[in-house]
Amino acid sequence: MYTSAVVIVAVGASYAAVPLYRMFCAATGFAGTPKVGTGRFEPERLVAVDGARRIKVHFNADRSEQLPWKFTPQQKFVSVLPGETSLAFYTAKNASDKDIIGIATYNVTPDRIAPYFSKVECFCFEEQRLLAGEEVDMPLLFFIDKDMLDDPACRNVEDVVLSYTFFRARRNEKGHLEPDADEDTIQNSLGFGAYENVPTAQARNATPPSSDSSLSSSSSSSDAKT
Image (tube, rainbow, N blue to C red):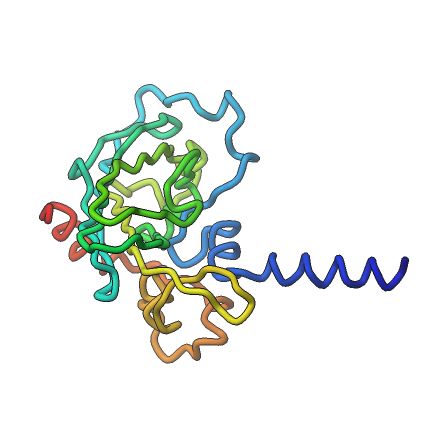
């Protein structure tokens, strides 16, 4: 029985390990990755704060060169109150003659707002399979936690950019799906690109930068719908 328990734990650990970078970022809000999880979704928290300043959420879409998809946001931006849920859509089309599975990574700028940016439902929670020539609408239901109003670092945030990058999926040595890209590319798509002189293996333990320098460039690109 002891041996069986060890095998079960080992198998479970191998599944839980893929992909750790997404799980870590989603759980901590690190590197501009929005938090996910049910603990933040109590009904009393999903109430708009009347009188608060609206925040403009811009949408950006990118894809790797290896993925022959068209991927665009259906709206340039939405304006939301803290605590208010909002629904947005992206469109993805498989422009090839083969069925393809894609995996999306995501991040939010400025980084300091990421711990308060929560997704209730998102196409990025699992891989997406598109048939040859298929076009689909991908929904996103999110809110900005009203606790941001108590954070001095977030009080002056008026614009937020939500960026997605779709990668072609591949099977790793354990048979699990993962983005078909090198680690540096994946980390950049998750917001790690702002960290200078930080070894890849140590990037997840670094202190997030507070600069909004990436906001202006991301905001302008979100207004250009491809």
